[in-house]
Image 1: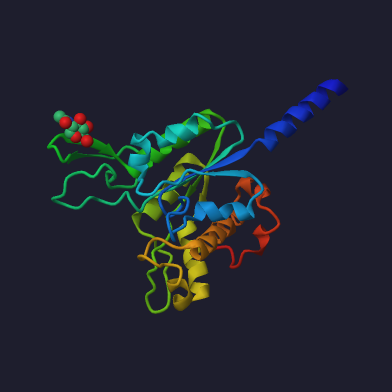
Image 2: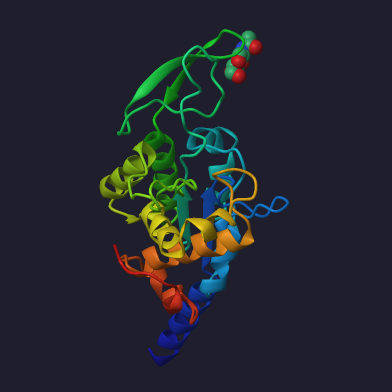
Length: 255
Ligand SMILES: *[C@@H]1O[C@H](CO)[C@@H](O)[C@H](O)[C@H]1NC(C)=O
């Protein structure tokens, strides 16, 4: 019995040691591209878990699915691993009159919503909702024993009267709904980042956005990563035990 316990303890310890956090998202999460850096590169500073940044520029929930990128994660997820899902910037409508772009989702807050769109070659294609693509991946992660966290998209550098509001639009709403439907932790990364940007002020935050109003540099990535850590620490996620000694010092409060 003693030996069994020792072996079980060793096995459990090894299992804990080999835990991995996978990050699934777009350019705002992805590894550096020139002066632009995604927050997924910076967030490892605040965590004591192997973090694999699978953020890819230009991806939506739909294209990440169709390009096999969720499957890349699902194929390697082990019991106890974590997966953070954060999409929305590339899921927007291709615009009326434009052909399908392979990225837009059927509009609406729910799993079963579909739409028919016309591809550039004239073929009619059935597309699904944001929630459909992400919830299918969450289900597959759960089947492997993985733990999913749904996170809302990052805000633009969009100050109005010196303030960025906490309304992140429909993809923030969809992310929150996914958390409720799947009974998984939702991190309102949009609001936590807006809070952090507001505290630093419009002039300082402008220095984080060298190219456009969406993509931030390394200094911005650190602030956005800190905002994720704050949201995580304010949640019920079991990933909280993997926040390292730098994590509790990230600024701002729980929302
Ligand atoms: C037309 O484009 C769609 C979307 O890219 C593709 O799935 C389909 O195979 C194409 N059809 C033809 C006939 O090339």
